[in-house]
Image 1 (tube, rainbow, N blue to C red):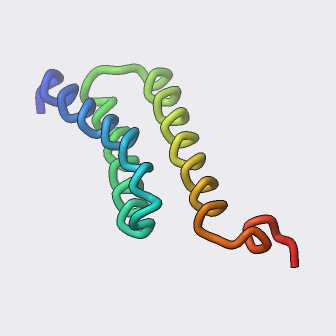
Image 2 (tube, rainbow, N blue to C red):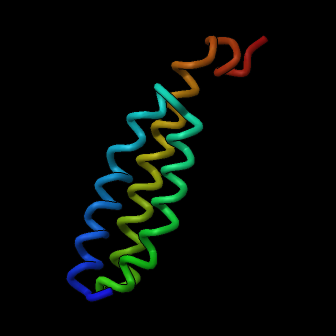
Amino acid sequence: MTQISAKKYLYVVETGRFLIPFLVFFNPLVTSTLAIFLDSLDGTLFYRAGFSWKTYNLVDKILDLWWLFFIVAYIFVAFPKNVASGLP
């Protein structure tokens, strides 16, 4: 894989990592599977595209927090108030 094609795939994967969390409200299992799969791909693509580890780490952590935000939002939307807050 050339550096240019790795960048193209990387842009597709990172765009997917940004957009896929919106689907968690419709099908959490498929969305979680896709998110984990894309998260596992981006490290290799960053390396092959010629980016530094520092750049990869920053982008990866931002997108991980983006995904975690949607997980928390899903918990508060999908479950009753007493379950999400831990109250009896």
